[in-house]
Amino acid sequence: MQVRYVDAAREEGFAAAAWYGDQQGDLQTRFLEKWKDAENRIVASPEIHRCFEGGIRKSRFEVFPYALIFRIRGDELQVLAVMHMSRRPGYWKTREENLK
Image (cartoon, rainbow, N blue to C red; front, top):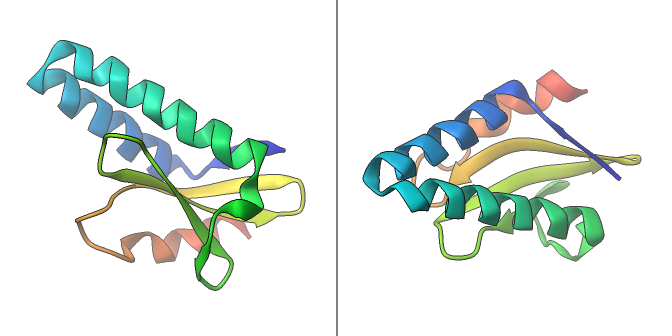
């Protein structure tokens, strides 16, 4: 399956990585690794991730309080957010329209 990010999701992921890098240099690399791990998990087994709202699913990062918010559309995994788990739940909902 192919992974496709809305632009805003990719931007927020890189912004979070940069923030962690500002805190401590190696944290940026670790964040990016955990992001890739979460992405690899959704590619390997997208349907094992629980639907929590309609067809929306999430794959949590290990260690960091983030998750990939995604949906399955045919042979594509559409990532709507790289979301911090304790901030503004549901802010990404308007992004669903960008990938129809």
